[in-house]
Length: 232
Image (cartoon, rainbow, N blue to C red; front, side):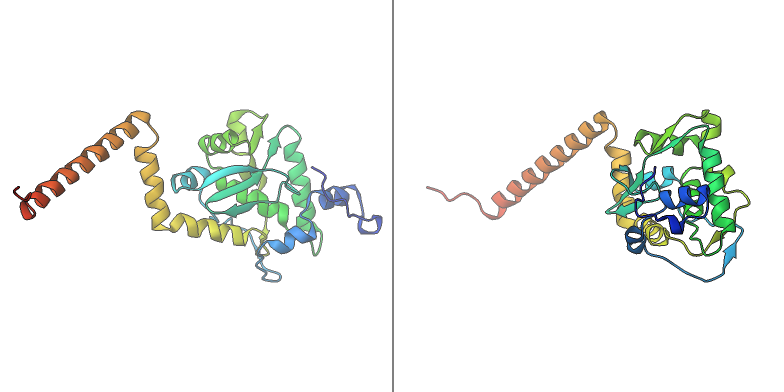
């Protein structure tokens, strides 16, 4: 999880600060994320930034484990694919997140990226089904009890203030825009209703074949009516 190799001793004040700097987004990656700043604004209520994983999947958005990420914070979205780096949840995860978030909440002029990530994941995971969807994609590896795991992030972000300085605001806007598109909703519904069961697929293909044959028969019937064969 330690990725940032450009840390100098003069930048570090204590061990937690060092660990925080090592898991954060490098400057180059941070610049690539769309940021929204409202200086000094703190909010205590969690907004519904994006729907849960199940709803996004039903809207046609696909989940993929992001490889070669610079940090577990480094999330990408493009062409309907939400790429999230792999994260393992174990007995040490809660203390890690709580310490990193506590550092962000109390240390001045610190971007609240870990808090933003935790809120983002809390939106994605609202049930064990959401947890299962991300688990199947290799995004979350769970070593906790199932009844505890899907509530992990909701417990972490409880009573935590988040800042409008949000490094994921551009990604969340793009996800919501994709989800609200009628074309994407129609395509997702078509795939979900007709192309998830092989028997349904065969029935649809057979129906399309019969329809094509009927159209061809009608065409040749009309063609012979208006252009009868020339007598020899």
